[in-house]
Amino acid sequence: MNNFEYLNPTRILFGAGQIASVANHIPPTARVLMLFGGGSIKANGTYDEVKAALAGHFVVEFGGIEPNPHYETLMRAVELVKSEKIDFLVAVGGGSVIDGSKFVAAAAVFDGEPWDILAKGGKVVQGALPFGAVLTLPATGSEMNSASVITRAATREKRAFASPHVYPQFSVLDPSKTFTLPLRQVGNGVVDAFVHVMEQYMTYPADAPVQDRFAEGLLLTLIEQGPRVLAAPEDLSVRANIMWTATMALNGLIGVGVPQDWSTHMIGHELTALYGLDHAQTLAVVLPGILSVKREAKRGKLLQYAERVWGLREGSEDARIDAAIERTRAFFEQMGVPTQLSSYQLDASAIDAVASALEAGGLVKLGEHRDVTPSVARAALQLSL
Image (cartoon, rainbow, N blue to C red):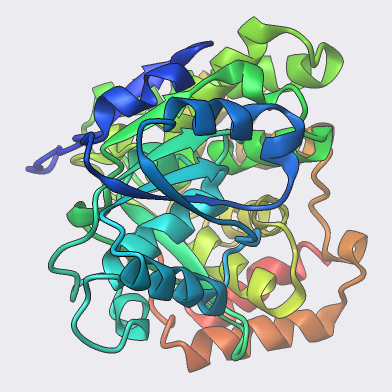
């Protein structure tokens, strides 16, 4: 296992009724900007609860943050922060709202061109406004990490940044707030969390049994709980288990000291930027192909995954690997997330477009070995036509 430093300063407030405690974690004199997406938080009562919790504060609202939040929209929020002298943000929604709020927090105090925050992956961030989050959609883990993904609609670019300055100071995780989510979004969330784990686990053996077992436990939980939430959507315990698993999948813990491979995400980002697919949909399309194309480089972990996660112990090594990849694809389909480009009315021309976008964005050496090139991405996507 490699040397590592693990930092995660986010305070988690988990369970029903925790929204009421939000004000306890915000300075009493803070000028607050409440950021959210569409109308769902008003329909499920979350908006009213947050407003009630913030009743003692000066509060300005900014709504309309899109799924795959747009740079252009967020820059309007930055201007509002400056004009209203905001000094604390509260993000209310799913990963897109929280991601967007991280960018706003950094851009509002950034001395330079804000796009550089994204173009340079966050390396230029020297500070950010403090913020907290109220999570309504378990999926991205953004509520307990320092990463963000933003789309520039004008140029159809999707870029990520990370900085220790944009950890949420607190995050409220109330699983009852997920009851009104469409099952499509619930399925997406399970797939998103699953692939987050895979990108930190499915590389090569690194003598890290603790991290491996953590990761495998999260995968097994999603495989168990995912179908249950579709079959019994009113089961609060299942909702809670999925919410906590999604948070643990990308709060940094399972990735410390081990190699990571984020090629599936980087390729998926281009599919979203070009064609508007949901983030989880792109992951479901890309991951099985990446596992197949990079099977030799990942052989050791694929065999471990086949045995420990899917219980595959019989047959040849190649047969077990094939079966594990097929089980993965079938699980995504079971969660209602198709794994073929054709299911999204896309054909081979989309593969060419994604490869070209990777090339144009300089994303030409991805993966744990830096050997996932645009041609490798092309080969992986060919398997998902």
